[in-house]
Length: 347
Image (cartoon, rainbow, N blue to C red; front, side):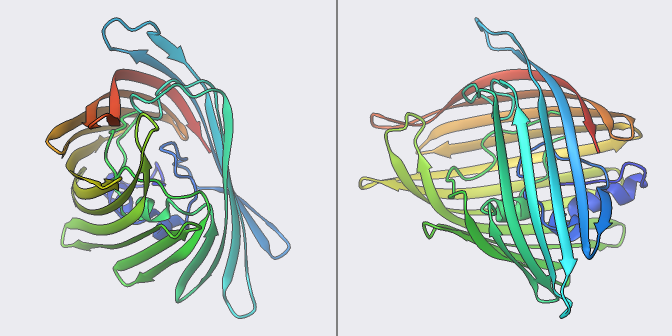
């Protein structure tokens, strides 16, 4: 996830955003949109270094859809990530990471227009072996390439729907991440043989900073009505540009969905802008796509105000609308307009 030291200069902070999170802070297995922005708490126990980050969030969502029966939905979310690492005699680094998150009934806060999620605790665990040649990874790592190559998430509680391929990989898998100058390569495969491979390039040129990323993913997607499983092959690309206090990015993608002799072509484009002034950070994002001439649209506005180190007030306005069918199959079904406000503390 993106981690920014809040006391660093504005321009340096935005440049830091453009870097791969794995390059900057090690590989994270927190694939949620809520991640601590602070430096980890650290201590040594013998030859092992322990790093801990965490976050507490108290959101209240407001359903802005007409005729809504549940207009206001308060919730609570808390997560933490613990890393234990050490160096072997051959200078290889080994580490074990654990991420856990508890969330109360959040409605559709984390998935705009999705079904209500009951109280639950979820976790990820992974192991890493790293050297000058890169890192071998194993465990709950199947979202790693997505995090390495994606567009930057919105500020505050801005959450843009549909900004990804539809397919999901299995929970368990293994792969590789390697840094080669300004280029970074990543690859993961799950137990079913589905895979995700990506590459990114990032570096400053003069007073500007640029990042480009490409990704190819193969997996399965279960239709919205849970009646059909599609095989999916998708190609995605992202371009990012930073100048001064502004960050601007564009992502495009194409996905082929196949099931029972039926092939569906989906394409989409997402764009966003992010700007920081003092303690204020704001973002605006938009998305448009089509599947067999049936459109999907979404938009997100996010605002974050840094109250004190680790403490922030966050606002988001998110909209999503897509009703895509293939004969009797409901491929995508999502419609929501939400406002979300939260107080958040990270450490």
